Amino acid sequence: MTGGPEPINAVAREELEKELAQLRSERDAVASTLRDGGGDQTGDRADEADELMRADEADRLNGRIREIEDRLEEASVAAPPPAGTVGVGSSVTVRFDDGTETTVRIAELADALDPTLVTGDSPLGKALLGHGAGDTVTYETPGGRTTATVVSVD
Picture 1: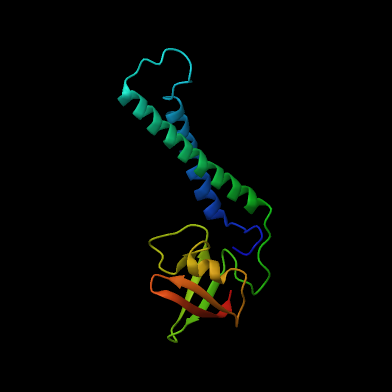
Picture 2 (picture 1 turned 60 degrees about the vertical axis):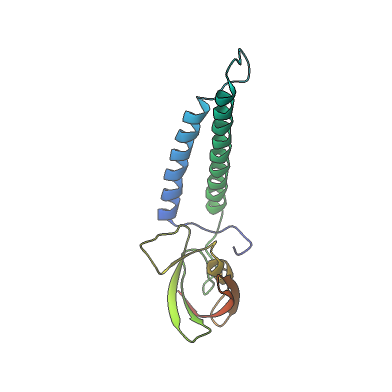
């Protein structure tokens, strides 16, 4: 992102906290089905494979939980970006190589129903973070490298 902690808006924080609660619940459910490693281990290979799958799922859940906890902690100490600088929550008008202009909003979480939303970890979002009006950024698209110029930041 911009190299420092990124702020997070209230809606994104609430969504991450909901996801965190759900993940913790799932992890607890999976953990309760795992053997503690001791005692009689008389299962067959299918039982062992199932145990390994549940352990992998617990690891995946723990990883995502750590990511969200770290993001929430980072956001709690982040200051908003300086005025005129693109950050999470900014509305940015950009001009592309073909001359078209569009306004996008940099957000924490994707929303399929909002085509103007760009996440801060998308190629365009990453390129824009930390820049201001007049800056030209380069980023990768499925069609190759492209550039965009920041027209304005709100």
